[in-house]
Image 1 (cartoon, rainbow, N blue to C red):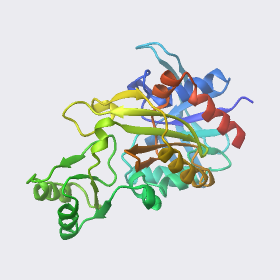
Image 2 (spheres, helix red, strand yellow; image 1 turned 180 degrees about the vertical axis):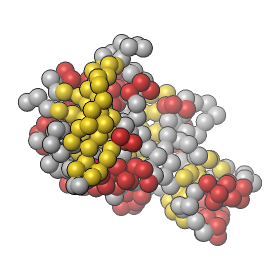
Image 3 (tube, rainbow, N blue to C red; image 1 turned 90 degrees about the horizontal axis):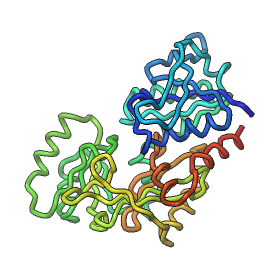
Image 4 (spheres, rainbow, N blue to C red; image 1 turned 90 degrees about the vertical axis):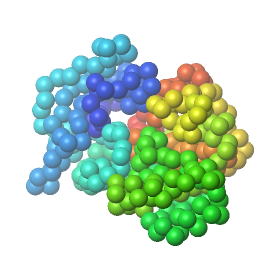
Amino acid sequence: MALTVAIQMDHVSSIDIDGDSTFVLALEAQNRGHGLLHYLPGDLSYRDGRVTAWAQALEVRREADNHYSLGETRSVDLAEDVDVVLMRQDPPFDMAYITATHLLEQVHPRTLVVNDPREVRNAPEKLFVNRFQEFMPPTLIASNRDDILAFRTEHKDIIVKPLYGNGGAGVFHLMPGDENLNSLLEMFTEMFREPIIVQAYLADVREGDKRIILIDGQVAGAVNRVPAAGESRSNMHVGGKPAKAQLTEREQEICAALGPELKARGLIFVGIDVIGGYLTEINVTSPTGLQEIDRFDGVSLEADIWDAIEARL
């Protein structure tokens, strides 16, 4: 079954072929005989009921500094000319991202969009997770200064971060006695119109922030991300180190609770974050972690994802 697969992503020239999950998804699709198209979110257009994209044929290969080739740019009708769209551009989850979900919703499910654009829009990482309160650390989402100060008084050691941030940007760890909270709130108020998120600090983050991949609602693998010395963030692009991981009973319980909901929503490729047995995020926009798990466990999660996509078709 040869498919035409359009990948909506940041430019392919910018990716790290040894760590990027979109790269191995593209490579696996190509190895299966599927044709690849590449376009940027800004290349989408909607007119007279048709969603089109200025796209280029894409070929990928695992060669440093020579990992892709692109063909001529042409207008592609995403409903007529494409079987699958992979929505893989990086956050932030802003109005541009939301607009892209509205446009892709016009072609889904006639053209299968992964993940389902409506459900991506309805499941921001730090909001959707609040549907599973029984697994979360103490968390506040608020703009009101008094509410934030009261939470800090109660929990003392806290994390403050943007509600729609990504990649660890703007994440602050405020220990008891730290006098910077008011200044941070002033800065956040100037930068963002949205509420902020405040959580009790989880000391277990020193042992790692576990990324668990679920494919069509089923656990597929996990990798632990250990923060660098002097760093509270475990994101690998800020120095976090990947380590082989096994799931605990608590983590299996979390996945069992989330899995049916993710599958029902058409969220085929999801990455959840767990620290010390607490669920902190459900990543549905552009999850990562495939290559690290592949290497540690000797598997091919990108093949499992394509099996799930092809089964949907």
